[in-house]
Structures are given as structure tokens and as C-alpha cells.
Amino acid sequence: MFYTSFTQIIPKSLRAFLRDRDTAFQKLIISYENLKLEHENLKLFYHNFESENQNLSSENKNKNIPNVMNQKTLEYDLQKGRIVIESILSSSLEELKNRDFLLEKIKAYGCPYQGWSLYSPYQQYINASDYGSLQIPTELVDFLIYCIQKKPQSFLEIGVMYGGFSVLCCAVLSKFNQNFRYICVDIEDNFRDWDYFSSILPLKKAIPATSADFIGSEFDVVYIDADHSYHGMKRDFLNVGRYGKICAFHDINAAEYDHLEGGTRRCWNELKLSYCQSASILEISHIAEEWMGIGIIDFNK
Ligand SMILES: C[S@@+](CC[C@H](N)C(=O)[O-])C[C@H]1O[C@@H](n2cnc3c(N)ncnc32)[C@H](O)[C@@H]1O
Image (cartoon, rainbow, N blue to C red; front, side):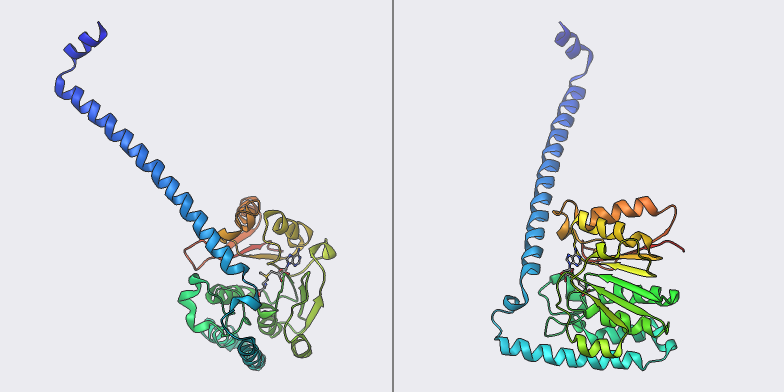
């Protein structure tokens, strides 16, 4: 009865149009679901690929390269590192405030050798050994320029690994405050060339230690780059980051830690939302893909 009246009332052409529209809509939904699935698979592939690259330890990273070659490249890069740090110490404040000048120093100092494809725009910065600053060079220079303006007296880095970032940062910032001190925290001691660098820079070593050993302490800058799980990064912030004048975080874009209860990205996004009303939030992100990035919470103290 209804069908008869429907076919009588609705012209055939309109019925055909409605039917075609429904079919097209169904097809759209199916393609959308397929795309979503493909996206998830790609994300998984990307995540596995990046973790594989990162998990290569220094000894098997270049497994086709004899150890003697690694040793020689490391010696060369460490020597080069000394020369760059010394040249920073003898540069003028005006020179160091200049972004191009500082970026040239970062280039000469170099980034550790990695197979990471996302480093490709920065080939000129890559060292032959695994020594260097494990940061995106242009993100690092903008972070340093930001810190220079604040002339900090104390800097706490949580997670220093080989100290590649620490010595560079310490050399630059020590020029702007004669009472400057830089505290290096890590659970393992892998700091390279410590005796030499600690003899020319105001470095202090707190290794083995974690942020819990500094709970409630106030620093001008706290740099968190240690445990990249959501809870690890959050606890570093709660232990010491929130008491600083500035708290900075490495890897705010790093998707490869998402599987660690949401990793650094979840933690950063939460903190950013929580503090954006009471503090200044800055994000230094130069790689469009989901990688690295430095986040700053400036408490304006
Ligand atoms: C990504 S590396 C740091 C890289 C370094 N900041 C740089 O830019 O060259 C992470 C370091 O954090 C250390 N680490 C891991 N968990 C930690 C924790 N709970 N407290 C302190 N250090 C930790 C690791 O031993 C490792 O050396």
C-alpha cells in the first residue's frame, strides 16, 4: 500500500536519484573505512621502522663498519667538538646572539650519525660517528637564542646521554652569566670527554640520579629529555620541571613514543593545555612530520 503510493507520488527519476545517492554514499563510507585502515597500517609501519632505527645500539648500528673505523671517527669528532666549544668560549656575546653565527657553530659541532630519514634536510650537519647534538639544528639554535635572552644562572638537563647537547648548551649560556652552572642528570654515565669538558665549562655531574633527587629544587631552566614514556616525562615535570623558571621538553612531536602510554606527545599536550593560561607556551617545531620538537613552558617568574 505504502510502496504503491510512494511509487505513484515520487516520480521515477527522483527515485533513481535517491537510490544512486544512497549507493554513492555507501561507497564513500567503504572508501573512508579503507583509507582509515590504510592510515593505521602506515602509522604502525612507520612506528616499527623508526623504533628499529633507534634501537640499534652504537655497536651494531654500523655493523658493516669495522670497530676501528668507528673509533677513528669518534676520536676525530671529539677533537672537532673540543675545537668548536673552545671557539664558542672565545666568541663575543654579539656574535653568539646572532642566529646565523650560532647555527654555523652547531653545524661545525655536528649531529650524531643516524640512519634517520627525517634528518635528510640536515645532511651537512651529520658527523661520521655517533657523537654530536641529538637535536634538530634549527630547533636547537632557536632554543638557545630564547635561553640567551633570559641569561640563566642554573640549568638542569635530565637525560644527558653522551653530553653532546650539554656541552654545546653550557658553552653558549656560560658566556651570558658568569655564575652559570649546568647540572647533568642521567641514570647511566655515558658522558664523553667529561674530564676535558668539565675542566673548561661549569658542568656538574649528577649521575646516576633522576629528577627525584632534585624534587622541589628551583632552576632557571630545566630541560627534560630522559624517560620518554608519558609517566616518565610527567614525573620529571612534577619532581622538578614545575619549580623552574622555564621548563623545556625535547621530543614534543615524537610519535615513536606514543606506544609508551601516550609518550611525550600526550604529556606535552596535556601540560600545554593546563598551563597556557598562566604561563607562556612556545613550540619550536621545524619538521612537519611527527618528529622531535622542543616545547617551552615559561612560567614568567
Ligand atoms: C634521548 S637520550 C638524551 C639525549 C640528550 N639530551 C642529547 O640531546 O644528546 C635519553 C637519556 O635519558 C636517560 N634516562 C632514561 N631514563 C631516565 C630517568 N628516569 N632519569 C634520568 N635519565 C634517564 C638515558 O640513560 C639516556 O641517556
